Length: 218
Image 1: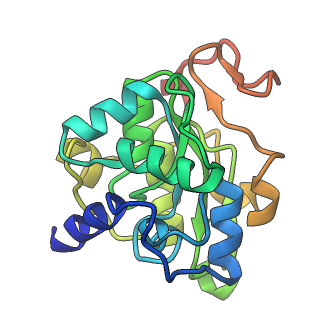
Image 2 (image 1 turned 180 degrees about the vertical axis):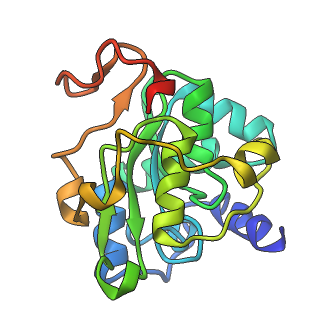
């Protein structure tokens, strides 16, 4: 809990805080996610034990997170402004690195239609074979993020605003998606694998995906 509180505090730091520059695969993951690489409030992203999911947070999810004790909605907006030099469109999804260990992104996606997983980064490497790579095309069902969590051997934990039953006890039954079959170099996660938003059953880029398939079929 103290570690998560520290991360939340770092995420709320003003953009003027300097002195950080990511390198290597962390930098590649931050760039692929659309996060700044020279911003102390995102220095934990894709580098610690849990913040591995690149999540596109819609406005409802951002408001919910802020109100539930996990102020990543405001943090995402500040990170966007640091990177782009202007405030984001309040109606658009914003990127943030959410807690993979507590399935935050898929939990939010099950509540809010305009939120979804862009990719899940593997900083350490499963069996020293997948470091610097990312799982893509992740369905929005928490069971699928849990399946990736088991594959990457990441410890489950709780997060404010996500019920403990979901965070700790979601099983990994996701028969139509296998993380082993959806691993790419993290640089390739930038544009080739856009997020599937539930709003229309299509990718935000307009490509067809999962049309007519219920969330619980994964």
